[in-house]
Length: 525
Image (cartoon, rainbow, N blue to C red; front, top):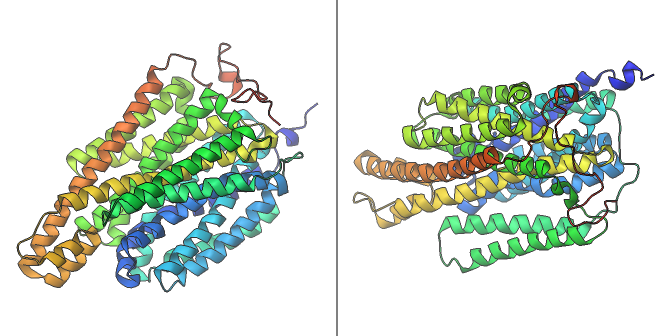
């Protein structure tokens, strides 16, 4: 007879609280810096490219390191890796807070991303062991994703509150007490687990994926700057894509891949990963663009900008928590499609009606994105074999971070290109002043403040008009991609993945693909 303690491990909810706190922390650091960008621009004087790396380097490092860290967690122990991740995260937070220049801050953000990758890749593999019951696991995944979503959403609010009263480095120091508590609680509450038959680590594959991602994002950012020849940015972009292609080819050919592509033979897994990446990329880019627009175009203080984002954060948490219950009634396929279409509609509403006091769009964007992130995560994690949970969890988390990094890079580049191309001459300002203002809305605000009076007002008004045009183009493109994906999923007549616990699934639910079948016919290790 199965004991209740075997089916329901004691202390599992307290352990889940530690995991949720860790995801809250990692998600918060993705966006807490957004409201500090104008302050950092004035005090550290980074170039446009440096500023993009300060913001985007964290998410991209997390994305590049998740698969590697997930396989290492399976090998060396998930609890052990989680504790190491907390330590790295805490030390990097201290280094970022004390940074005296752009280069130091970028380096600290990269190390912070390493710590975030270790934490994020370890937590999803621990949840199935804590919650073997399908109903409880679904609820636990919903709470866990909610914690990450809330962290991402409240980051601007917390950052605004801190910058209102302290210096910009305080947005990193706030991590330290959370890290200390999580370390102590994690040691006491979280059980150790690992893959009893770990695979050999593919260092070459890890290097290919990291270099490819870095090159792709660098190429996008250089194109967005619009200065000089486009030959070098395009060459770097193509080289990055070739490196990523080489990574995929290598993973298909070697017997012990860093990323087992057999997981993507399951259509449900692939669709869930794609939905998560596209949705979260759009959501992360929206947060960045909204905080910049509220501060630099609408004149909000950092705290006011953070408060204006509160409805988005609350709705995101609600969507993540309620999605599993809703899909018991409507199904996972309709749930994913509905969430994507709701977020797309919200982006269109921002483009048409503006941002100021647009609460329906904020709520719709938050709820839709939260629902998609939870449903996608639960679908992917439920497909994992216990011994490969770390790897599958890393793929799931990579969908988040890779989506965030590429979403910021791509939509940010589109935004910058449109801003620069639509910024015309200002009769009251010199050519040099106009050229400086064309680099970014923050630079335009600084030039306008120095000019003052009518000339400054005219230049700032031209900058706001160009920013609004870029914002509309970026959000419209994102809405189009989301809507297309949502409609394709809705029109797919093949069986949708089962939703809810087994006792609530119909007998006609499709069985998953054989777990040892790979995408290319190779037998999984």
